[in-house]
Length: 201
Image (cartoon, rainbow, N blue to C red; front, side, top):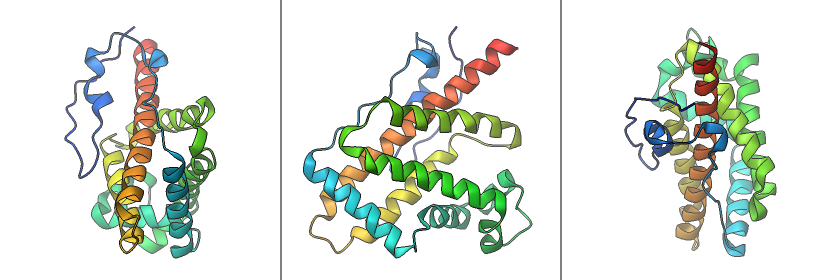
């Protein structure tokens, strides 16, 4: 059974959700779709891990929290997805529900960094599962286009921490590929959620 997704999601600052935009043209189900391949050379692997370590050091090992801080700075209305719209950003970030979400995102990136030299099916599956879980949030107003904000924020944080490094361009390019891989996997997961919902109807 095919997946029907008629939305045309505009590209973000750095990324686009081409898999969702092309969902109607796909002849295979979401279960049969494979994510784009993330291939980094040995130097890029080192640079990617070093940047992640620098981000964790800069943000006291709370990069996930900083990502959501920046997201809410750009889109305060997204607090409503987590039931914290009445709270200011700092109180919202420290709420139990949102804090757990920020740590899940950070843990996923941690696992990806450990395995970035040899990204296997398990890593992709974890990201796909994360995308599928976001389908449930659709009832609370989640829009997959919000992932573009996540991608843009994370890439801006990367560029900020690498700004003065001689390897800035190579680091940024490696992270651009890494974030694109993450977003692609999550799109597959979201489409799987959408497909399961369509089957149940």
